[in-house]
Image 1 (cartoon, rainbow, N blue to C red):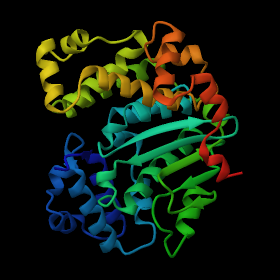
Image 2 (cartoon, one colour; image 1 turned 90 degrees about the horizontal axis):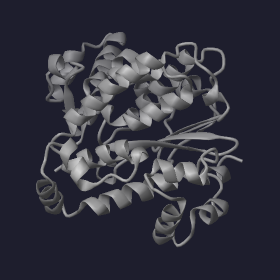
Image 3 (spheres, rainbow, N blue to C red; image 1 turned 120 degrees about the vertical axis):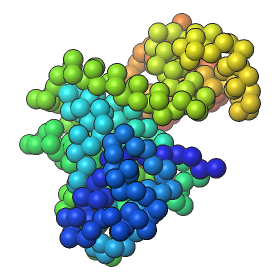
Length: 344
């Protein structure tokens, strides 16, 4: 059963886009089997299946090029729950993207956000889980990237520019609105949605920086995520593990205590899902290690620390078990993102 959800900010932006075009939104919501009053509530989460249906029907009703871009333009940091305030108060865009990746499940739970960088480019990616690939609408990818792009421009009004954009859908007949939005080359039919920019750009200080405000809203984001993932024991364990890793290798009794479960109860719940604590921890470390190694500014020792290993040698052994090569050797063989060949 497809159980992923998305938050009410998207429904509100769709309603505003329709109203901007002079189209009453409520009949469109009704045809989507959604209560408009309920769906646009920031505290409401709607199934991804229903939200995608709403986007499709709204786009059909609007019948204009780039409807998803218009929806994205009505998303404001205040529409992003506490995440918007955290990003707005970040020291630089690098921290903002860190928060977007960490708390991206606030937007939707049908995919993941991640980033990587090399000496010349910073890559932000939004990837849909395979089971939702046929459900998500092209306009949803457009809305997400447009919303992030406009937020970056608000934060860096004189400096922000994109080098390249990739979208995982066919090129529309009319490209003008896409060119106006992104102001850079665009590749369609890509494997995932991506924004590509200068790594120097994202490290520039932001005038809106407020570390205390950012930390306060981070805490709200963490509480929100814990609530929406409450019934998903694997998501709960993964979330807590990632939070605890920089303090050292998490143990099952520690995570069980955080989740207010006995160790035996947590073991049983994971076993019912066909997995176990060690397997999840190993998978998270493997996944994060591959991402961290694509970021040249992170040393092997820093990566080892972030993954909760007590010694670099332990990390090296684990990484060799995962990939057949040590982390240094792996980094030397794959020093940059595969995007280099696409954008010389």
